[in-house]
Length: 349
Image (cartoon, rainbow, N blue to C red; front, top):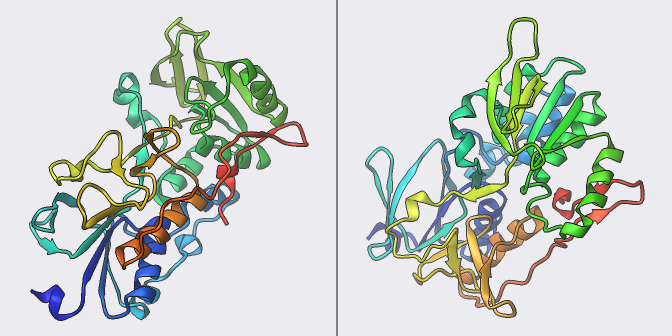
């Protein structure tokens, strides 16, 4: 077997923070191994947390890249870009790619992250919304928003609120159609919610309570001479905006793991050492639910610091360690001294 002739073959699915931290750790701890990283992204490792900079006029994709292609060559990490994994066979230790190629592995780390969640009732209107996951989506959103224009953020998770802060700083009008996903993944007690809504307003956000309007029901194209989009509510009311952007949280990107032999709930279920029910497969980042013995349940851990720490821990355990996960990030939404809010999930260093 080729992987035996050239050392163990570690395969990583995903090229985000967890995947790249894992690759770096694997190379340091197992220098004779093969390391392959497979990603849907066309770009090398880039900082998606910096994407709001496109609203400051930044359009050079190279300014967002953390590790250039040369880094992966120097580290002997085989980077497979724009490549889709369609299935994983845990028993045979193989994974299938979209163009009929089969890749064998000795160990597999699933770090494919998550995709934006979209409520089913709004799915058909997705073509009228602007996403904000890739560099291309970010540029398209910035190009569609006229100077001083009006952006409507649906849901209001922390990713959207982070973008909203940049939009306010650069002179745009920002509204939030707030529903149960507001502040996700933070959990704000119901009795404190009005206080946090007031904090958003003090920051400059216009807050619309979607629940009072019967929830969001549709997105329509605006008429001639009108703003480009209309957000429609179940009570019949409408709000016009130049762009509408969905921020309803995220859902793990693990469809290809169905049939892999690893247990799945909402995400991949892993032990505190990040190992799945298959001894050769580990998971890190937004794809996995980690067993929490104190709570007696599997739970997600979000945030840049947590995700990076998971990537390193998984790589260490893949190469002989057996350490348990310990969160490295505060998960509490805070009221700032300036009267606004601050999320620790906005800390990316």
